[in-house]
Length: 364
Image (tube, rainbow, N blue to C red; front, top):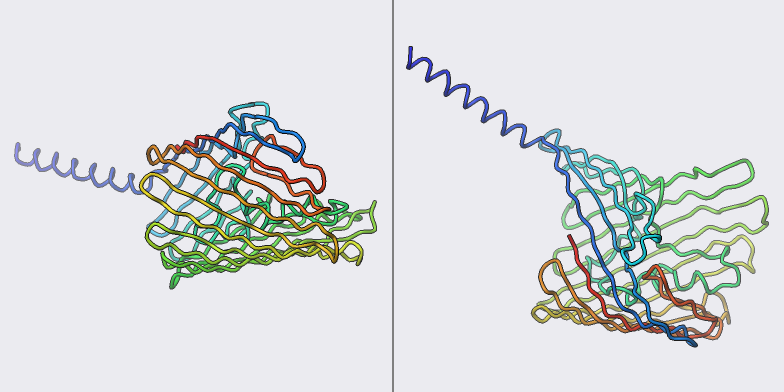
């Protein structure tokens, strides 16, 4: 009887162990994460210098995953922009990439919610958008945020840095070092007299760990409004080339932006180039980028360039202190400005803004 009882107890214990193991494989995981990035910045708009405590895209998020099988999981994320230096400027809940979706190692990942378009995500394997604070030239030059404020009417040109709302996104599995991405956002604001435009984007990226190359395209359909005769959309093409060799890494990024205006006098097109170099020496990393954005129309004189230098020191894997200097050089009719903060200097047309920054970034 004692032997039988012992065998029964062993069987029950083994069953409980197997059950707990199976539960551990399928139990949902939830992670809190975020970033705090604040800096003292001395900024000049070309006429006035002022000192500010700046917030650079600090954020707080929660994400989770639950496995249904060895190949399929449900996933979610809610990410919100926050401003520790001025909480009144903290953003609405889920202001950044926030979604629900399914992830399969064999079939890829499908997301629905607010999410960056494939064109925005393409960054030469992480080697292109490396500078912090105001030094980041990818948005100003390549995605057209500098050019967006240059033209006579903002309605005829828009940037393509798109964290798209109401977005359906697909990310393929990695195959022979290639990954494809696609997204589509329907025209939810459409009425009988107004179209706000659908947005579609796709990219193909090759990355073998040392070298990277990618191409992306994005299309916003022509927008019309009952109060305006002007109709326009936005199309963009982006090319990236990146490499990492020992302590050096870098990237070359090219883009072409076209507002597709139906009226010739509203037509705006730009071609843009960005060079990025990074050198790591122990805990120190030195960064440099230089970008040029061409005229949006013949003799428009709205071309601009941007130069930035940065030195960053990693105290550990989570905490980095850094200093940087950035300058935008505007042609006579250009009005390019920095975009990497909640408060920023706004230059007059033709002025050249600068920013000297000392900051600390903590990732958790």
